[in-house]
Every structure is written in C-alpha cells, then in structure tokens.
Length: 298
Image 1 (cartoon, helix red, strand yellow):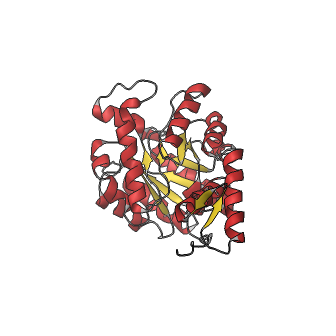
Image 2 (cartoon, one colour):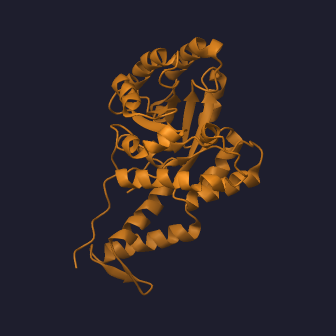
Image 3 (cartoon, one colour):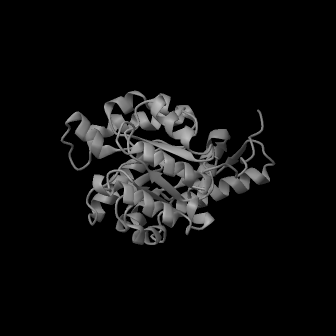
C-alpha cells in the first residue's frame, strides 16, 4: 500500500480568506466603522459599495474607502474584501477603477454580487491584480445554473450564497430554517468540491440580535458543507466563529492523527483500532487548519 502524502506547504495568496469563518459587512460610507469591524473578531471584513450604500452616496463612499485604505496595515489588508456594484449597474465602472488602485496596494479580495456569467467575473479579474481573490456571490437562478463555471473561473477562491436575494429572485417564502434552500446550498458545496475550492460561504441571518437563530443557521451551514458565513452585525461574529471552529474533541482527534502519522513515518497506520489512510489524514489536516485562520485548507 502506498505511503500517505505529507502535509501541504502553507503558502498561497488569499490564505486568510480561504479559511475565514466569519465575513462581516461594513458600509463603505461609514469609515468610522472600519476599525471597529476589523477589531470585532471577524476573520474577514467586506467593505460594501453595493446594497449598504444609497445611490446618491456611491461616489462619496468610493472616496472615503480610498482615503481609509492607506491607513490599513498589511495584515488588515489581507483580511479585507470590497463588494462592488453588480455588472450592468451605473456604478461598476467607477468601482473597478477604484479596485484597480486598491488591489495594487494589497487588497485581498473582491466580492462580486449577482454573479451569473464568466464575462462578469473576467471583467473584475482584469481590473485587479492576479493576487486579488474573487468571491462570486450567487443570488439568482442564473447564478445557480452557472455555479460550476463560476467556481472554475480564474482567481475565484470561494463561492458565497446570497440567500435573501435568491429567495426574492424565485419568489420563495422560506421558513426560519430555510429548508426550501437545502438543494440550492448543496449545489454550491458540490461545485466548490468539483473545482477544488475551499468550502463555500453561507448567507446572512437577518435578525442581528437573534442568537438562537444565528446558532441554528450556522450549525446548519457547517453540517451542510459550508466553511463560513456572512455577518451583518458585529454581534454575530463570535457565534459564527465558534460554530465553524472545530470542537475541543475534534482538535484532539486531529492532533492525535497527525502525531501518529509522524510516528509512522508517512505510511498507513491504525489509530484506536481504525485504519488511517489519505482521506482521514486530509480531514485531520483540514480540522487543524480551521482552528487557525490564516492557514489554507487542504
């Protein structure tokens, strides 16, 4: 039987975003909130030029973001994404000009709303540096139909689910558990796996103070193969991080697997009476990576 592969090296662009559990939105026209968002405990912060900014404030918001970006440290820029306005909107051209500047200064990623076509993603990719990751936000039936194509597009790091816009696109009236969207979420998980991407990012919980609903939503996402969740309020961050982080028992198991792997010298081995082969080793590696944001998943 062949030897197991050693752990992969911890090197790739967008490493923080690849394993981020919590993605906190903050309006681009509220620069006084940027530092608070970065200090909230969120793994990643999305500065929003789209839904959070009224049309009359779009130009000012771009200027406020440009002014604030130079004040961010290198480690903060590695946690930052910008959500631009959608393809075909009146504001995307100006957004892309700003993103080109920010990408040259180390912006980690761009969230692309209402992602539906390769052409739309390519337009954004051409405006930013190759090191700037793209996270398409699937919010419509057209986006769902294109999930596999979007997942394999250049610079795409993870898929994200716009659950509220998706419901509106279909005219759905989902219950609190959003059971009606289970097949849709599975499509994102499958497309991510086929493309070799990290686990996708689940949508928002609208109730900013409903901790029970947030816990239920986050737990459903983790059970369903998602690796993180969008947050719309700092109060949601801690619950999301805790739910998507491995438990103490899971971490202990992963540590024991890796220690036994090292002791076995790279070969297949048994632990607690069970054979450990390559898939089990990858699960242990992924569990440890999830406990340390900033390391890539395997």
